[in-house]
Length: 275
Image (cartoon, rainbow, N blue to C red):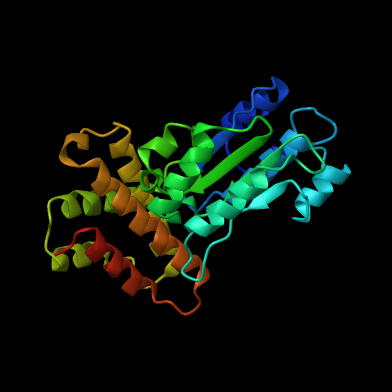
């Protein structure tokens, strides 16, 4: 039942579990989702499912392998590290490639987990591409991303991609109505003072601001997947950029103490396109 603890919808769990049960685990994956999904936890639980000594398609959470992975000291699980600027650079990819040249130390596969794959430099991505083009049968690489468009098309084409949406329900209609109006106005380059009037009822209440940001993200995603008749009015990159701004703001609002929610919301509108 280990994958269930990730909180992602069951359909993704069933697909991942089936690859383990059917022995069809591929050499490389991209897990893309917003910040509401703990992607490192998901990658770790998938790794446990692959390596668990019980071989049931899920992790038992009891064997030595599962325990070591939970404690982050399993010899065959490699985590990519970022530099002081928060970027995965060429030297780090080179380190991982050197490790992959060795056989797994205790299990049957070496699993590489790359948090913040969005930050991999182009040079490092080109180096990583060599490994993806000539995969080793005893290795699995898992790239974790909030915006898959930051990865080279050649990288994406060589990975199994899971775009994980954690939305289980539509945001409250009050926020959806406001979000739809804001998204429309932003798309038409409405003046900033008009946008500010729309958000005045929200004020500086942090949770209400977060709810509005989530609703806006929901609207953009609907446009992106064609559930809205406005799709032809927006370029894909514009939507990706807007969602990235919303994700960054949500992350800051939930992690930074003392941040002013109303200022953050206005900053979001300016970054997306308010004039």
